[in-house]
Length: 274
Image (cartoon, rainbow, N blue to C red; front, side):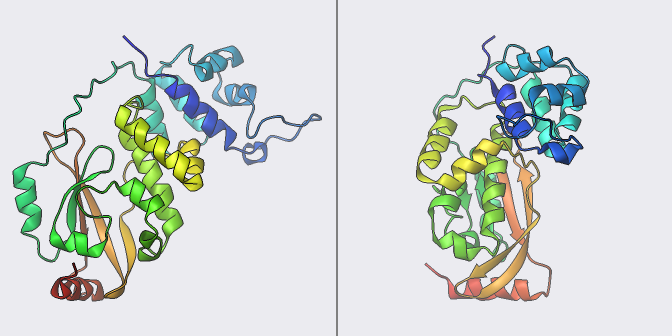
């Protein structure tokens, strides 16, 4: 059974380097630290495992620690629930997936469903955050919500999105963490490698965030848009997994009934921007 590179070791090292010794109650010793964050032996001590075993994990010589060890490492590295779940996924022995190269196709019933929602922006996102289908109001809400657009690429390379959302830095961090979560252990996917490679070359911000190995499984539940036609308004966000597909997600934006945000959506619909 082929391994997927050293995914668990890369994750452990990245998260270890983000922790300052003072954050976990460790005092600086007499010598200068040559690497950022915690030392390997310090993580091992905090997790209650041997330093030799932890080194094997980081070097990829052991990629399948027990769930008890994973939980101990998560506590030692101060991982949140999403990052802990991701570490558990990385530690499970599963065969590498074979991708056919076929384009992702949205079920026709889903396309009909979102087209019938005149006041609810909705689109379908593929497994690597490509927009596969969108209704008219979603495309009017954001230039990124159009079929054929990759959401991560748009966040970092489309300058219009920096003014459309009120908190671009948070959006950027969330996009990278969501991509990491969706990819999971499937890091050898050629399409993922191409996307990460392109953005790493073209965006220093993406390169920095990808190296952190942040993970966000659920995603933010709301966002404020600074729309050039109808002004600023906030929307709730729902993410629904589409059964029978390879990781497709229905993304729905909606407003509280009778709210200013709902009126903003009504005006946006009436304007019918191209």
